[in-house]
Image (cartoon, rainbow, N blue to C red; front, side, top):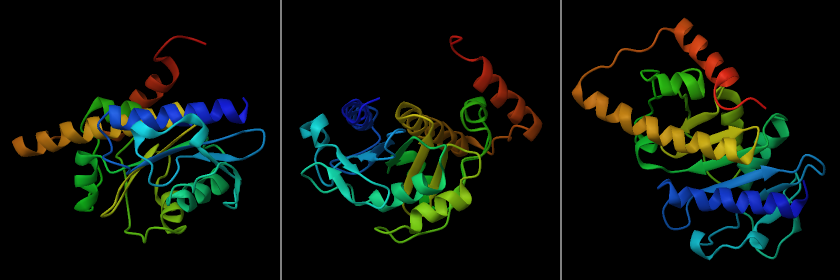
Length: 216
């Protein structure tokens, strides 16, 4: 994959966020890693989604130096870069403040496994990480410390971060977090839903990861 192809993927991933109702104005961001150079492509800071173009996606190295692009990278770049340096399996990353998932973050609660969709996609509860200051590596450090095997984490009083083996997988996880958070929120208004037993969560997750979709 060329850097230009990755720029296109990251651009498309960013454009999916407002389409899915996960961001407002200029909040949120998507990034992706180039496996050949190790460079990271990330959304530029403060640019409205409808005004973005693929060539505006900023290319940085793992130390944050701008390698290609005329705009400043996202203010969350340090968070993304910390994760990429410490999680070589991660090739795509997303940050949103999507409404229902961020409501759980606001009260410091994980999203429990009360839906098969949570078991399938995340393999367990969506964890909550501690509050972190914005702008440095603190959120990245907390994500690596607390996310476990999940593809998503809530950061207390802040929002949602998702990771994946591709840009698309990370975007999908962000969409799914908000979808399940909405359902769980409404379920909690009706009563206390039962959590799915851990062994059934593990079984369902393995089936979903190995058997769902078309064979490759």
